[in-house]
Length: 277
DNA sequence: GCCCAGGGATGCG
DNA sequence: CGCATCCATGGG
Image 1 (cartoon, rainbow, N blue to C red):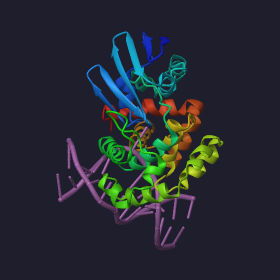
Image 2: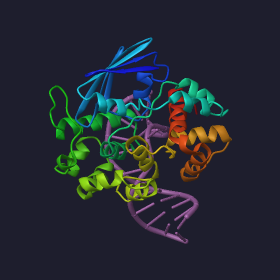
Image 3: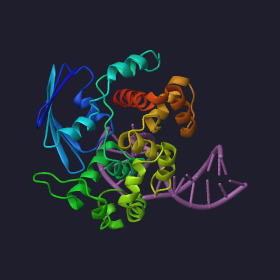
């Protein structure tokens, strides 16, 4: 995988560790659209256009540096996959999602997005997030930015209901009202156990949502978010019927260590995409 | 009509 | 602590 960086474009030749649809469709990001062999991706107030063919990916953006980090292009995924395919359970999932990369997204954007994600499905999450951007985000010439915290503080409980948040509307309102920009900045500089404690103290944020924020928004890789799919994965692999997600997360993060976040994402994508029960 | 979706809050023992 | 129950909403 050879990466060349130009002023407004990143060119990746022979991208064996990067499949754009896989990376976008694996449930870590909600602001994108795919049309044939091209896609548009948004983060904060930024936008990138991706096009791809068999042996080349091009990423065009006004902020190439941001999206270089966003798509985790500095990391050697071949090395990670080489370790994880030794795990009998994981091999099929890694082979299936071999082009997945873990996004480095904005922590605050992930916080808001994953509060919406609770007991929800990806289609509805996307719609709600898009509504909030259109309603409270800055117009950026053809698209809307993710709303800033100060902008979202103007949203009422009813506004969040109109956005389709359902019973999460009150939780979102409370958390947005309470949160400050300083909280978010502090969060980025905390050790991960304190990040977790702070996050789960917020309304609408439990262990799973906190782990997703850490994984996709704070670069913490030794967490194992357990949603309904990972719960199914665990029961299928261990021939059990537990619903104790805390136990599952503890066990699997101990098993996969610093590669937990990657392993989790391969499992999630493979089982959900194939609707394995 | 029932079940499910990247679960969390609350109350009760 | 663990456990049960409730929670909006739309698609299958």
